[in-house]
Image (cartoon, rainbow, N blue to C red; front, side, top):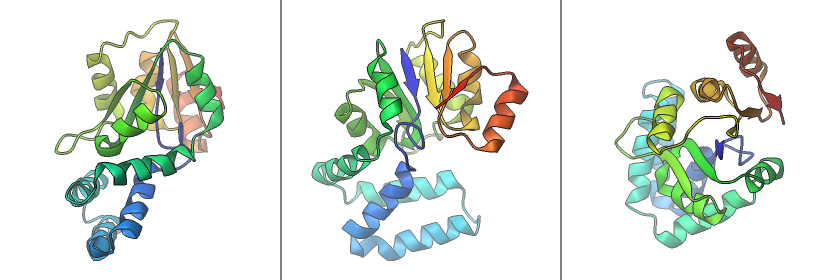
Length: 190
């Protein structure tokens, strides 16, 4: 089994940033609202999760299935082939991400990943310990056959849980490398 992160890992971009750009282009009527939310976030008046919740609420009132499919298609063009090869060689995969469930479900299906856990609207962000808890609730067992692929230190709880398996870190920052080494986590860099 392989557990893989989305942003900066399976795709080479931040999917939510791309989603906001997609909404901005696709729906001119929401541009002012999006700009206000992004400005509030940049000024740290609202949290990242708060901004995400507001933007997902705007999107849920406008997006059709075809719109989501168009966005997913654009994300598929940003897939990291090395990570895709790791997933393709595993017995199964679970996409675990803080990105909104709104498009993650369709993206996972499109790339052939049958299981996922993502941020559900109105619930805590699927990251850090919360992400690990959701993965464990889905029945995943961490053993020597488990592979975890991520790019960020937010996934330290997940990497710790996979101490007997294989951990891959994609294009890590210096900060991420430092934190992983401080934690004594074994990993390979891709």
